[in-house]
Amino acid sequence: KLILLDSLLQEKKIMPPNTNGTDSNSCPRCKGESIRKCNISISKNKNKPNNKICTCCGGCKLCGDFLCSEFAPINDIVTILGISLLPFQAEPTDNPAEIDKEMENLYTDWRCQTNNGIIEMTPAKKTGSQSSLEEEKVLQLFRNKLVDLENVAIFPNFKPGPLINRTAFGVNLDNILQTPEKKETLFRAFNLNVDEVTASDPNWRKQINKNRQEKDLVIIFGCFSFVLQVETKGGRRQGNVEQQFRTFKAYLERTHGTLLKNLKFLPVLAKHPETQVGQLCKDYLLDISSSADQFGQWWKNFLHLEAQAEASTESFEKLVKRMLMTSSLVLTSLPQQLSQNSPDSHLIILRKGQWRLLSAPPQFAVIQGNPTTGKSLAVELGLAFLCTEESCGSLVSLGEYSSVQNEIRSHHFMSTDISFICYQNATQTPTDLLQIMKETQSQDSIICFDNFPLEDLKNPDVRNQIRDLMEKSRNLWIVVDDSPSSFDLSKDADWKALSFTFLQF
Image (cartoon, rainbow, N blue to C red; front, top):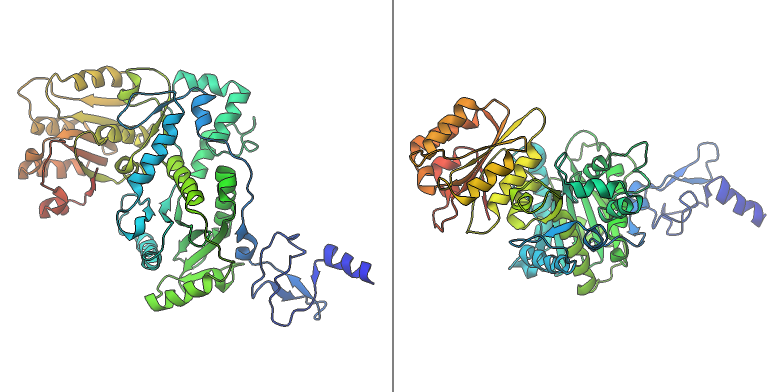
């Protein structure tokens, strides 16, 4: 009888009756993978009412430990593949120690000076759509609970890296992709599933873009040893949210491997009461419209889903540094800062301002900041990633006539699909170049102005020309001349009325 009962449990997926509807033992259907059972995990078998069948809640199946396998270090890209690294404000290097140094710099760059040093990697603010407002509401609910906590990292609208240009690759990358061993190293270092990139589907850039699909909110709780993924769905149905949870957990395991040891994964769906859900129980559901008190009660219950154990500061920092680094990488050969030295592809590490601009590219942007903060490189990269076969991109330099930078750019962009425009004589003004752009650009143009003099931007006539040009542009970015200035255009009423996104580098 015992043998027969065991056979039924294993083969027929029958579970013993449970009076309270909860079972903390391993699930026969999931073969022990499920960490816990919730209030919808046990349902009646219509043919045998006295028996129960597991219909595991999607959240219960996912929450719990990660599979901690080895991962390929980012350093392999430099040491094995020979792709040079471009640290911030430095020449390209093949020294892998620079990667560790840049990880430290990024960690310091993103670490808040208040709120107990919480890390928050926040992209440029989105437009005020209904979905973005709902995501911001949910983010604020969590933010309010994190004030007194330490070892917390917040990644709103998280996009894993690296960022890869669709077309602009150097000759070194072609050689790497033709060598099976190096190709596999490249894929593993870039967090790709090597088995999925086969001869029948060799589009590895497509898989990288798949990895880069935005996650509404990711939070690392070193204080609780949790990795939290929150997806906000304000529509009538939850969509494919359970698949999103599974995909992201697998990505984390493939990317960060042993760094996830002793951490637990917890998924959350933020929704409205009327939103229809699938196989997710109430433990993993958050009401978007929750008040602070209601969220506090939900949060208290949610923390008891898994046993809590504080992760060490060292392990927390290692994971967060790698997440910051992988999200900040760009692989391309386009920027003139690189191509004047080599035709090869390089790895670029984006600093805070550059990443905020490129991670969620705004339609219209004004960029200000101190000298040597990477504004010019940011707009060159923006053109590289925004331009498509259907759109035309233009870089307009308002720097001094016959400057060295203009000569370098003129030579570089001759061999690209990006047009470069600058002063052709010493008497031309910003108004002249604005008029040229207005007369020559199509409706789908992507235009970046570099070194735009601040005093000219204060001129109402120039502002009107820019307003007219916005109507003909798909994207319009303006880098203000980096001479130190205390005048902030984001606080100017006339400029605020133009619907620009303002970024401070």
